[in-house]
Length: 402
Image (tube, rainbow, N blue to C red):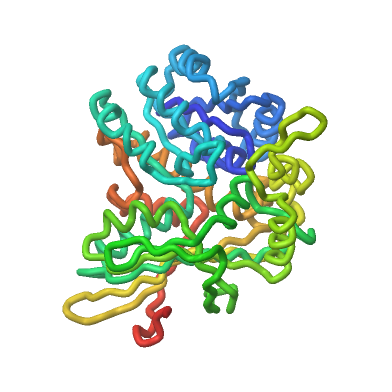
């Protein structure tokens, strides 16, 4: 039905390639592109071994607008699926506009030299994509992505009015290392060590990093320490869920993980500012990234489950109600299916499903869109069929999070 180009050959790119290959009646020509073509070739071999589908590979410098535009014009895909680094979002959006290609990503733009991610840079492309008749879907991962769709689905089917949303992300997996990150270490650590922020009463409130904690009892995973962080989906959801009073994001960490992180931060290893070492400018976090285990190597070692969902309070038919809408995912089952652990799986599967919505025409309105702005029903149905089944449980309103 459509040709797609996947840019990025990390853990998420691997999952997207596998899942698109499983739906070869939708994605009948798949090209996997990365700066390191050997990574693409390794993924292509695994896709053929596991899925019986051949995908093509190509070397691409995703920092080069001209080279990316030339590739898109030569290949003429319907859609570019961006699972590269968030620093490259704007380059890839520029190339899509120049070549007339629809666009989808899983994480919003972040400047390379500043630990700050927000949507303003990509939202600035709205008129350009609208004028070009092209669709750009932002954040089609799990959080952001599925969590945004969970909120839209809850508002459409379970609430007349939503008052508060708490997005909760628990990884109860164990990879056996003293310290490792489940996705790109640089992005992961930059995200965790910045100040926490949440939206309440029409304004943003800022707290020191990891300074607010609550214990949350996750279905199928159990009670975990959850820490309040800033996460990108808050920025769009607070604008697109009418009447919302408060929205926060929480992520679980073990004491061991936080102890290692604190030590690394205290000795300056999480800094993004380059220092001079024998005449070479090197950011400490880049060195740390090089010595930590590659997240792609964690798959065969990781056991346990993830649980990610939205704890939502509001009203329906004049009655206040509270639900938790969530997915749980098993690391070992993910690895058996697509050679990746559940962190990559829960991001890669929604990227494929979002791409499917564009290919099928369900999400084909020109412009730049966050996930909650699009109709949630077909996406939610696809989650059930393609590896991320979800559940909704009722919770006592009186016991909502502080």
